[in-house]
Image 1: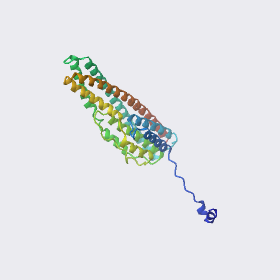
Image 2: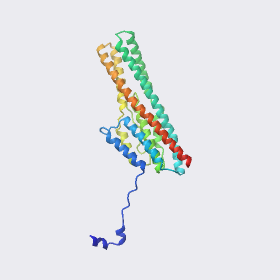
Image 3: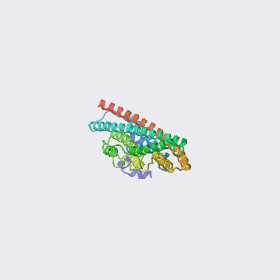
Image 4: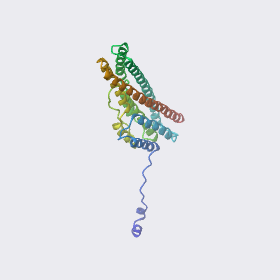
Amino acid sequence: MRSILLSLPWRQQMVAVAPLPEKPQFDRKLTEELNTLLSQSKGGVVGLAQFLDAAITTQKIALDSLVNISCIDGADRGGVEKYLEDNTELLDSCNYFLEKMEGINKYVDTLRVVAHLVDDSKPNSVAAKRALELLESCEKRCRVMGRKKKNSGSCLKKLLRQKYEKTDLGEIMCGSKAMALMCCSFLETGLSFESKSGLVSVKQSQPVRSSWLRLLEEMAKQSSLLTIDELQQTVTAARELKVHMKGKREKEMKSAVERLKKRCRGLEDGIEIIEGRVKDLYRSLIDVRMALLGILSQA
């Protein structure tokens, strides 16, 4: 073998395979985060709280990656300015979802009053009449709260269609925004009193065909929003109680009241978890915003 190698022209002996370019820090770390998220999911199903955690971590990864960027060119400057506009929209959306969760908590409080009234009431009593009135008001509240934020879906799709330069900074902004937007899409559906609706897709939304983006596309197809079940189950329990009260079926009423209490506890616990994470996402988006403003000031 040595003699064969020696007989080859020297140029052929010196040929070496060029190593593949190293992936940027942001791409590498976000891909690792999403892979970990999928590996910890049950049967490929990712919950809303877990996805929010990943979105929060994404903003921290973005923040760490921005430390390595000291100057930007004209094209990236325009991208940063556009990102800052989008960032404001995302912060507004976080506030909107926090208000919606506050409304859900008030809904739960009312249902607890209903359960207390039914426990203490007798057929045809004033307490039973008041409980039915409150259940009617809860149904009206469900219809109002079931309405989506005006143009929220079109707003999310519009933001996702915007392009960034194919630079390290462009990818950081793309990833930061895409993860936050997917959270907004999941929250819109997960906190709705209505049945599940289609989620905003990230497919072919951005020019950056990174590993993390392909994982995000796959996750958008498979994700299940845990809060939906808790909310829908509570609404169903309230409606069942109303039916039994109107039919004056005392035995069924008692069972329905216990189910309602259980559903209220589950929903309240779920909302508390999601609420804390939305607040954390809000703060992390502010951090990224401040870092980009600092880069702009040095440009």
